[in-house]
Image (cartoon, rainbow over all chains, first blue to last red; front, side):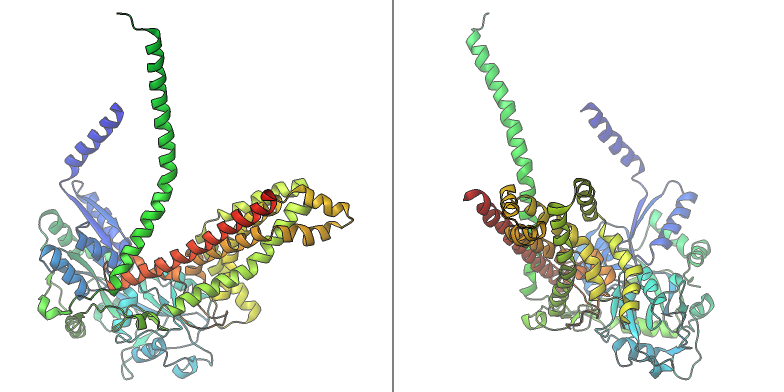
Length: 273
Length: 348
């Protein structure tokens, strides 16, 4: 029993000692590796600050922000109006949005697929079910098998709103749990098509995408995403309740600095500038 | 001061009884805790389901809410600014859900007009369960019959634990195996259009269901009194005739219960179907098309849903349906084992 009390005392003392600068970060699975790298490097440089990073998904992170269980929330999509409303209800603040990095959404096909390029319109028609055969977009005569992320993913929501213009995905669209499963499925399916972060694409082929008929096709590489020529790009966000101050402000400023942005490139995403 | 001996004895006895009483109550309490957990989970799931049919909150546009602050000095390109303007026109609409919507044939929860049609999900779950039972039941029952009636001692001692270990196999591993290996194998054999489909999922699921049907069937067959088998053999029946015409019919209630529990397991399994079935909410009877089951839907969507929103409540509704379904199956199975089988051999 004495031991038990001693342990509790130890914990409470240690938490008192270190409680000053603990920053919790929660949210997007797309951003979790990036956020961990940031935290590791920052903590190495500033040992007095502790940063705890967890994933769970953009929605989970935003819910945590609303419930007050996290300081910073990572999100690969902007906050929904209903979420802002809830945050305002709880903290009478709409929250502060911080753009931290850029990401290009690549369109994947199997390495065996001879398709050369696609326009954004064609991608939309394929995913809404208007185009069902590769022949219609200049490929071989076989059915297009659609792969998508699960609808819990920020990428799913982004793709739906920005590529499909908010139309519904075709019901025959297969939802894969995670980009790794999606990449695996497409690498084994010569008629498959899928989408995901450019950082993930390994073992399959990325299709060059054109903004419209008249422009030229670009691959989602660093240069094209940064310049905005690749048509399907998005921001990766951080959200906080109110204008950052103190240790949190220093951390966010560091992320937006030259040094923080160089890590973005190392993880496989694209810097803001 | 001298204390009479008798009083000491009774005091000792009382103190002894108190500790015994406490220990007994403690054990009873732990036994009832699991029961309490089930009741509490039941209450929780249903409580979270209820708000579905209450009135929705009024819609609020972003303009009414005001503008969100930003931090950091990032220069946006024209296209990016246009996308941001579009974002601002969205409305915080929270529509309630109607019975017609729930009975629809589309599952599109993330949409301008969310469609919460449960029909494809229910059909998907049933389809997957049927396919897995179609494969698992004959294999498991025949395996049980073999180990209980024919197998030599050494085979019995290896087979039973081996199949029971299969029950403890992590379902993620089975799912991953189906996703990577089994799907390609099945596609090559049948020349299928969809690599991931209900058939592959059902086949993988049968790996998880076989141990359950096997163990319970084996117990049911072993529970049959030796006298029945001996009487059959004494009358001149062969081993096969005894197994098929005496043992199997006598164990039918137990085997039936085993199949029901197997269906319950198949119905509730999440990870295997999430990985191996393609998760497209199609309403069709074709076993070679992708399906989306109720459990996979909850597994995939619950983590990201906005808490308290209609979508969240609908997921809990699916949870309630699953709960009721497996609860009923288990109850029926229990009744079959308890009442029929036991009465048959012990009562009369």
